[in-house]
Length: 607
Image 1 (cartoon, rainbow, N blue to C red):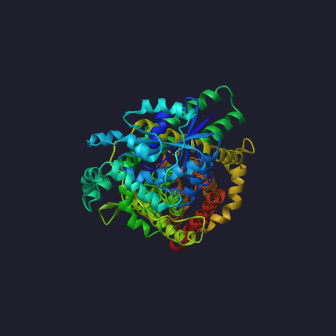
Image 2 (image 1 turned 90 degrees about the vertical axis):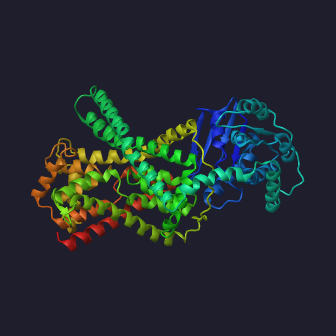
Image 3 (image 1 turned 60 degrees about the horizontal axis):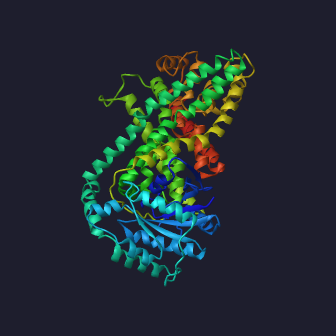
């Protein structure tokens, strides 16, 4: 099958055009070890590949280096018959710099190039026009004016593309030195001045909105409102969907186990398969909702403004302005937050962000916090006679997690500078024009985010779920205390003795590796409270009667703030970084750090 490759700068509408050409016939793959995606699909009997947007063939990071190398391989491949260079008609100069480089690369490999002048609808909206015939003569290749958003000119381009893919246009040689970057830039400026629309027309409209959005006061208020909306959407919009997934899994488990009867097979299906695998499938709606909201902010042009607002304070800790949204999202769930860190261009800042996101207090920690705070603090206790003391404790736990993340970021920033593979790109930001999102490719992106998470996380979560189930189930018929897991709990009891905790807490901590909220259910089983997740007050009363000290309780709370007790997060970290050593190393490091902080607090307060 002959191949067509799409290239262009970011924000040129390239992926939208790709979507219009290929529809649902697409697949997404990640380059090994990086977060940039390579999309491929089919248009008639041609394979179409959408390469990541880039401003230049001279890479600034490992991600760009790999993407550009793959582009070079694709252009050299005999199966590739045509290179389609997508230009932003509203910002012609910036598009042409990369287009001329790509054209030179194609000519070196005897490949033809055609140009697509996208967003022509916006040019017409400003009362401007572009002479495509004269521009084509200057570029030495056909130029097609279209709008991938409104579909203006798309049908004509599709008809031409089906012919060009089979019989590419002749390769024309231009009087220009392809290796001279300065000459290419001057050429791009000259063509833009002659054929492009006036830049101030676009900037005038954009600046009117930016006067409000980037204002020191009003912009800050708008930023907080938008971030509050993002944060609430992850909690509220995803909740019914998560409940729906949970209900469907429960019904499916009920139907399947009705055929297996009582015994080990039913227990395995209920606890290991539907319990273990289901514990991470419920996060898929959260990931998809977050991808949707971030996609709207990105496509509209606001995400770049948010990064600009946050960059200065976060850069002190070795982070990027784009780290803010992943950090904020991490308070709902670390899994979609880690995936949201893909928007950070700098590999080093992206890695630091991903490695510190687990320190944000996610929603899975809430049942643990609620239980232990209820044990340690009376319900009606107040702080300064005004504020509820339990609420103040929750605020303190969240604030502690944020402070720990920033401190760890500062430390990682020092150590990662020694890694030559982690290049640190300068914070260069293009403020795109404000536009309404196009929903069809956005829905594709949302769907792909959920499917990618399932593919990456499912294998490792299944193995861990299976291991914990075996340990908790055997010997058959034994209660949890006398199971293999219970015996392990007794063995590791001395480890938790400095925290003032016995084997029951050790078992609950081990089981909570599947998901932190399992800690409550496990303790409920061990303390004889059925349905402890819904009956936290009853379990809290039993733990109080058992004599959990203030020092032990606070030590355990701080342990859960820092510890990475979530196999799904470990799986996603492995998938996003491409390295098991980072994911499991982080799990061990945060576990040790959490233990040290917890023991220190317990010993200082008194166990």
